[in-house]
Image (cartoon, rainbow, N blue to C red; front, side, top):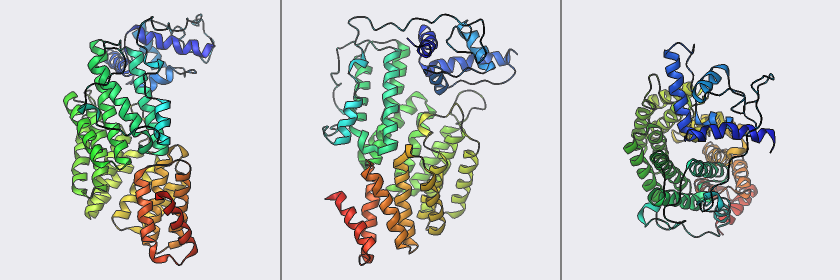
Length: 457
């Protein structure tokens, strides 16, 4: 086994020895750091996050900062070297490599052996070879995926979470239509394990948390796939789960999606109500003092509210919310940022403001913003770039710049050719084809409309 793999497993096994998930360990370490700060053993506040734990469990983990090393050593009663961290300066605390983690005992139901609806299911969804999603998972009996009483531990929970992260990554690139079926099956598996699995109380709490988060994610995928009724059901279920658990983070995320959906459904006042409710939940993000949601979350909440005000025509409220969004965004990222807010980079916030200004009929300003968003957006977020381009096409056409609208439409279609399947983007393209009908005498317009017609042929 390579040295990097030894180091990864050293810290991971230390976590497993205390029977905690990555999120659970991050919370325990943060609580310990807070106590050490009160006792004077730390000179400043120190926080830990699940994302930080994942980095430390990677093949090439970064060396912890001094304050983090102090907390880790206090909690595990081991030196950094014994936890598998390679010091930038050789030190005597380096120890021999630990053995690889043991394989699951014979007879144990191992989810990694093929029970998860991962790569093959995602591929089937992408090619359209999978079946339809069918009834929502909580309206049917538990799925029979594996023996009753299947053992569920930390490894299985983390694999379920990893698969959910894979779904999110594919959604960002290609759109919700691609992952809807696979995510639906994944949620069914989690609910089956909740009902039929064998696990400790702590693992049961984690499974319930995963189920709630997946339900909200499925709502987002349904929204992007233009399955609005199913999306609303999923989002309502996700919000109920968050309220029952007192999970302010999940409630905040779900409410921001509901706000976004309300805009598309022509209910901007409802969008404002959802966004303001999300703001209240964001202020109760943690039970610790001074702990509201991270700045990127506050920025997302503010821009959702801004879009609602734009659509209602409330200019002052709109401008105020946009200012709050950019002010929060300027505070940067933190280790506490949830994975679901990673999409909110500068390009996306610029795009969201541009979309809102377009809906406020500020088309010239919208064009400038959407042009910039499309230019600086990362390929990792191809779906979001497609949305900025198709909205740019709408905005430039509203300004009478037909040639620019055609160019933006062609760029969007290039992304579709590469696999983008977001129904929201495709619906906008269909609308663009109708809006370009009066200019059908133009060769570029005819070419674009013919290409667009091929999408529905």
